[in-house]
Length: 217
Length: 219
Image 1: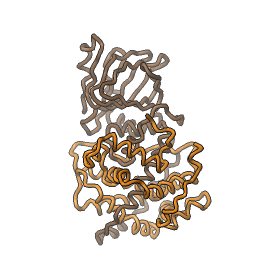
Image 2: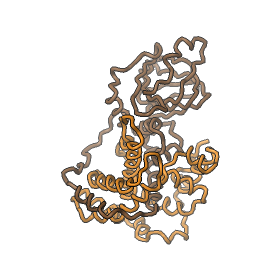
Image 3: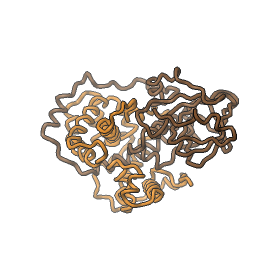
Image 4: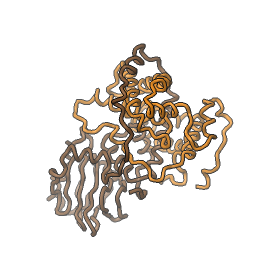
């Protein structure tokens, strides 16, 4: 534990979104603009706030949809996904818990589940008794992680992601953006599966997503 | 219920779960483990942050002209889901409860051996057999090894093998070639969720007697 209180300051990250970095210095309140807007949508059905979220996240969601060419992909998927995700965002905003995640992370999880389910519906004729969303019903924590800790970890992810070696970065992008399994990434990159997994572990350690002292075997 | 488990999915597996690239059957097992394990839930949140950061770095693409209007026309405050008043912890993970409801598990328990009952789930995929196993108190299971991968999560009670005692929430992976002989705890029945990718092979001399029932049978 003692290692992780030391914030490694990296001067090379000032090019990123300035207002987001400033957030991490503020008090125990999530104050980045997207989270604030999402809270407004949830609390007061604020259509204007929703429109702002749409303008920002819509094109990113379409980019995310087009990054994956997995089975089931079709040309109109991008705009279909944007519609499905944004309507879900509207409908579920009241359940958004700013203490648990930033709006960006929350919207990412909605988008990921939607993308998988849309691709599956297109490529699968079998009846599917579970949707991807069903895997994500974790109970709320009895002792939640403090907001400050979470902001620190988001900050850390953001700054260290930009500095990962290409070999590690490339695999994370394949998995998260292209929706490839480690086995598929290994085949596409011509690397042994063990190498793919150890690069993933190294990347996660650098970003302090996993605590290095706990690294198994 | 909030006590962290002793045995967890490997972090690369959690990452695939976070990215949504893990196959359905292992995903069911990971989601069952998360129900019990606050440590992995915290880690998953950090993995989701990686995903969201990558998504926000994706190349933005211009939308069709009418997409925004279509969405705005569909916003209806009556369809908004009110925040859950109290998300009570149920004893079974959500995904497992849903499968049990769909599959009427209570009616499908089948005797596998003298001390093990099995109820198989319909999961819409055929790579893995997904099932619940119930080991009676003190029940011995036949010694077996594995041809494929087997993921197991203890949902209720505990069992042990040569190496350890496994309790609620513990997540186990058996790889091809692993041989083990699980045994139910003396103080009560044990219910496990498992996903099995290939037939297990019995290794005791009388194994052939029960082999047909242990054949993989994805539904």
